[in-house]
Image 1 (spheres, rainbow, N blue to C red):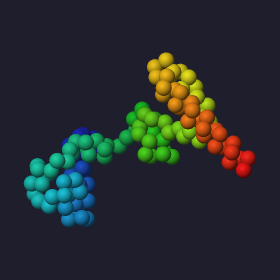
Image 2 (cartoon, one colour; image 1 turned 120 degrees about the vertical axis):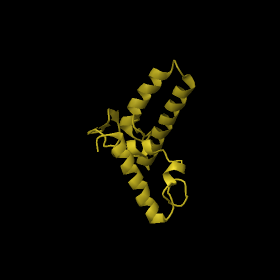
Image 3 (cartoon, rainbow, N blue to C red; image 1 turned 135 degrees about the vertical axis):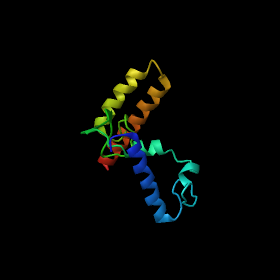
Length: 126
């Protein structure tokens, strides 16, 4: 599959396969017929592009960072938790650097980190 039309055909087959399982199109809910794809709102090009193999190098997918541990995290974003001690250091630095653009955001982020640090100390002390 080297061209877009090949991916579109694969997308049609994928939709058809899922439709066969449920008896209706999984996208529009309509019955499957010969001319279904002409009336269905599914964007086959988008689906075809989803099926296109992606270049993967470690955590880079098509040049964008993608967490393998947190697949819900969108490409280009980094999952950082306020409870992660290592992340707290980076987030504090980010808050400091961001202060000129959005002082309220920075103050709220710093306060949220402070509260998480307090929680962690209390749970350690029992």
